[in-house]
Length: 200
Image (cartoon, rainbow, N blue to C red; front, side, top):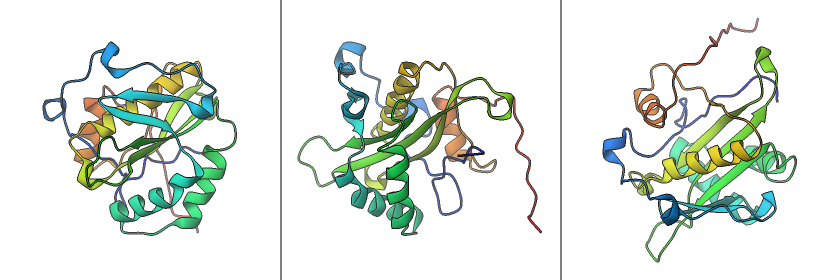
């Protein structure tokens, strides 16, 4: 991919779900309660965060992800998500991450509570290698349960395993909810300014 894409979340805004600040979240579990990343190949990585099982995406997850994205954005994009799976779920798994949070317990929530896309990108815009959060979305009925935090934590761990120490994303300037979420996770304004124009 060329230029980093925003972590899209609403119809025309970045998609994010989860608590808007740390006060609304459940306390984070201690490391021994969270579990550790298993010593398995990257494709099979599983980790427990805040009682969420976060793992690599599988082909069987894609219809559920399409349905979740449609519930959040109001748009059905099956071709887009099948293409994303081909790029982020099958190839270059050491630098592309497509993670899902699975339901735990026998409640009425869907099997997939959320997903996150990330990618290690090197030397774009003169930047040293870093991890980009490309998209993050959470089932509306599963919000305020730490799902967004669990997904971001797991993605951060994948970035660390890939050898990068910085994580970036883009958020619409006027989307206060999403700014609060990412700032609550310790993300701040970076050194770059987005520029754009209409293509004639």
